[in-house]
Length: 263
Ligand SMILES: [Zn+2]
Ligand SMILES: [Zn+2]
Image (cartoon, rainbow, N blue to C red; front, side, top):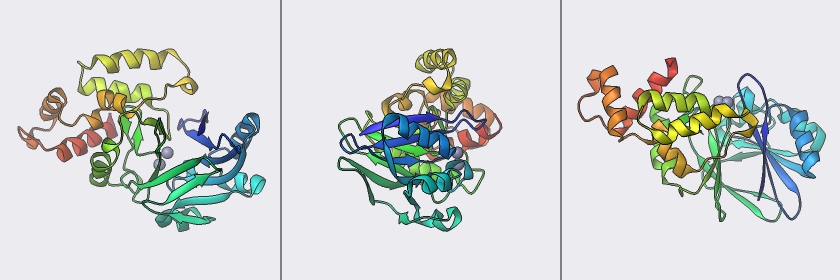
């Protein structure tokens, strides 16, 4: 499986991805924003785009569909419940479906609501597994729930699905928010030395050189995956005394998300 990350260099800081078969060069484009930029990246790598997949229905993840389809006749896939909002979807997807790219790539569809109610992630179960997680999990952060989402559902997605994946899983999010999110982690957990180190590195290079983290690393620097951490819980209680002495993980997650909304 070949992965080409495309940095859109827009104010929303989107990442698009090309996932290609190393034998046939056929490629799937994830969340195309600027069609021309995606087409150009595919040409440079010698890939033929045959499929488009949207992780969810927000325009910054679907805007490039029409341009890519016009140029390549690619088939469009999205969560079945988001298909009518997106329009032009050829295949509606649900939990457990498999998306094949060329001869060698198989991607499992995870139904991951929270950022929106019809959001999916793609999981490649290869030697070095990979997760294309749209606006669900970010580097050192979690998606917001402002536009059709629900923090309780996002919590369940994190705990019941994402946190259970192999620690070696490479994380490919839909936006580049690494430095900002690490700063939030450090605001909540000032003693997190690894987050401090990563933040210095993230600030030292361009966003298109952002490192690809693993889920194991995320568990060490992402407050939304550290719901039992004593420092995080203690500082959260200072802010929200009503959560009591031993808040459950769900409460910690929802309050962290609430805090991040205005942070
Ligand atoms: Zn979104
Ligand atoms: Zn987005």
